[in-house]
Length: 132
Ligand SMILES: [Zn+2]
Image (cartoon, rainbow, N blue to C red):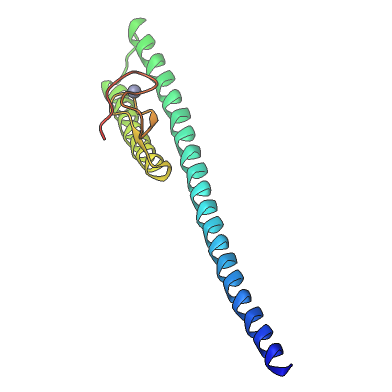
C-alpha cells in the first residue's frame, strides 16, 4: 500500500512538472506576442504622426508657392527646408515600415512602401515586383 502511494505521488509530481513547464512556455509566448503587438502599435502611431506632419509641410509649401505666385517676397530657403524635412520624414517612415515587415515576417514594396505578404510576388497596392 505504501509503495502504491509513493508511486502515485511520484506520478503526480511528474505530471505537475510537465504542466508547469507548459504553462511557463505559454506565458512566455503570450508575453512575446504582446511585446510585438505593442511595438507594432507604437510603430503605426509614429508613422501616423509623421504622415500628419508631412501633410502640414505640404500645406505650408503650398502657401509659399502661392505667395510666390502673387509676387510676394519668399525666401528660397524656406521652401527648401520644408522639402528636406519631408525627405527625412519619409525616410523615417520607410525605416518603421521595414521594422513592421520584420515583425510581421513580411516584405516592404520597394516602390510604394506597402507591407506585403512574403508569399506575394507582386505588391498588392502598386503591382511592383517584390524583392525576396
Ligand atoms: Zn507597391
